[in-house]
Image (cartoon, rainbow, N blue to C red; front, side, top):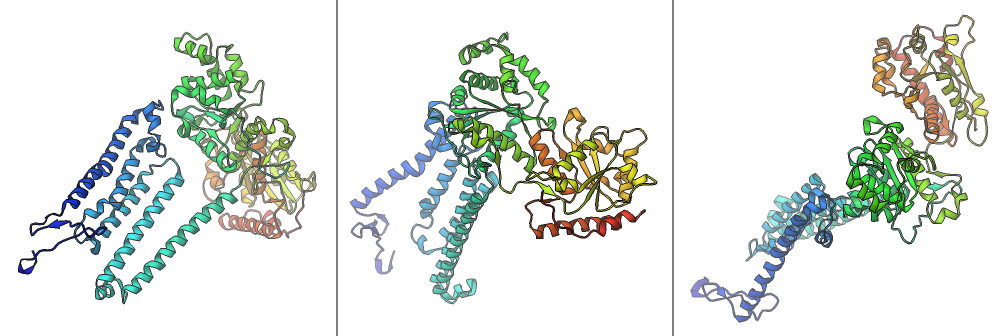
Length: 640
């Protein structure tokens, strides 16, 4: 109550003729206000209360259907609520809606009389925005990383805006407190600071967007060798996807996700059907297979045991879709050998199986199926190309992805009549190319180290590849390590000297221990060791941990520490083997043929540093070879 028995009256800001209170007891105002208040509470219950509650109930109702990929009509109708989120966070849209409603409307219920002139609303809004940003960063509810980055950035900017509003409100209400707490002389200075801070936030956000855009534009993409241009990704009229990828969840889920995401980066615009992105109803798998131009099969352990995988196989077989098999050969990563996979296929892809469900599925999906031999021919390349080996490691993985992309393009409508454009293959800018040495190189190999001589010859040929020249190959000499290091009448070594050590299951198990003895002798003479790790099991390829058991302890301990240096993998597939040979040559001191003079000098400096480290850590027994290696003068690059 006001003095002298008077009382305060309040009016609606939008229409001063409407009184909001009447009388000293604060009773509601006139009839117009009471009518508006009724509308307000009705719509308040309808939107901020009822709509989020209904959305939450709908999300809980369809949660099991979405997680099991068995889509109902209700799940289809409510896709706008959950399609952007991971299955474990289907309710996040309701959480985000609650945050928006609180910041946009419910915060007005804090200090309803004079809250607009106080700081409490701004403080609460700042805390809510900061907590929500932290929850986003920890929970990561979105399927796409781009959505997560955008949401976190938006909430961070929103929190900064509320903090700026707090500063302005404080300085406008009390300039002395503004100077004491914030450091500005007046509200004008605080306003100028907030404007500058806002501009800085906008510029920083713009720079981040520009950086990500430029990075995406400059990211290496697949191009045609014949023209240097990106391939044309044309779809047939009846299909919406370039490929459908089929995989076993237990042993191939992570790999297939990598395949799809990397292909999407290397081939902008490619559309590949992946279950986590596109599967709405597991009962419509056959329709999804029909909606793709090609059928990618990721072969891992247990693939043919999966009933749904067999459904996809039979559907692709019946529709005569081109098969593109991708083979996971690493047993430790869920892989299996081709022989084991073929045996698994014969056992589970049998049209005479006693399982009634299998027979019913075959009759419905592929009634013309003739038996396991037909499936083996389509999957394992008896009638087409052999499976593409999936290899990890950036350079090797790139070759696998290029092979997948090439087969997809060969079966696309655009290149069906333009196969000549694909004859030269695909390339990715800045990928490893032909290498050459800047001077004479001698490769030492031990005859007791089986297959080392063959690898040395491959390296010599690889050093001369590119533009049809063999000049660099002529600068590479291959010598027997025993004759060069222990022979009485051995010719002196000159130029760059490298000992080639081929690692397989029999490397250090030779009679007499010649391999270990010569490796030790080479290291005593400060000769670089180039280790090559065989990956093909039929050639003795074993996991690297096995070498710690068969290698003599003297080579694993100081001053030698043989395995402190990385052993480069050697793969059998032609495309991967070419990359292996180039990487081995680079480790021996070769430089890419397209390198400039500065890069060649840098490579030479790195070689001298490596030799200097050997001199520092290991005592010399014979200095002649080290002096010969260190006394080399840089020679002009031999361009193959």
